[in-house]
Length: 195
Image 1 (cartoon, one colour):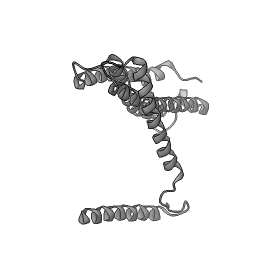
Image 2 (cartoon, rainbow, N blue to C red; image 1 turned 120 degrees about the horizontal axis):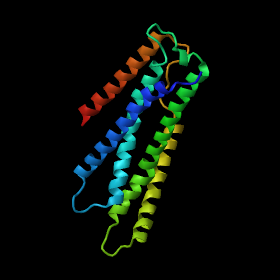
Image 3 (cartoon, one colour; image 1 turned 180 degrees about the horizontal axis):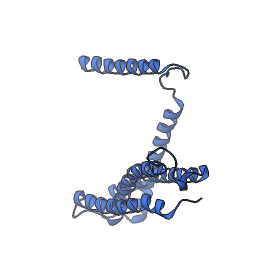
Image 4 (cartoon, rainbow, N blue to C red; image 1 turned 180 degrees about the vertical axis):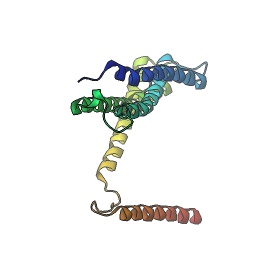
């Protein structure tokens, strides 16, 4: 049995309404804080879209929770339309792909478009052409991407603290967490005392 239209509408129509409200809020927010006399439309639009995409990604969490909880009745059994595991898996896969798409868009804005727009704006001069500004901002943007890749590789390859064994009890995991938190707070305290 496929997912009924009512289920899809109940989850996604409020999300669409929130999406429109997010675009309106982002537009007003960026326009309120931008310089009134020294702004460019391309930079303003990219800032509005970047803020909107970030807020939309946050708005996916309630939709995800709603769709998962809407699969079950009050007694804990699955509803008629959610009896089939493939239907549930397809719905969860759709939400997962939506998360991935939005996180990819955020990464694009964060590491490519926003640095490019920032440096494009900073290269503004009365003698500069658009081509020269694009070339200069592209150079700086490539440096930002290289720095981001280095940081991501360091984060992926440098080992972190050791965690408790996977077969340890819950109490050992909590004890490890408490011990780790007290060590971190002791380090902060000792740092503050020395400075």
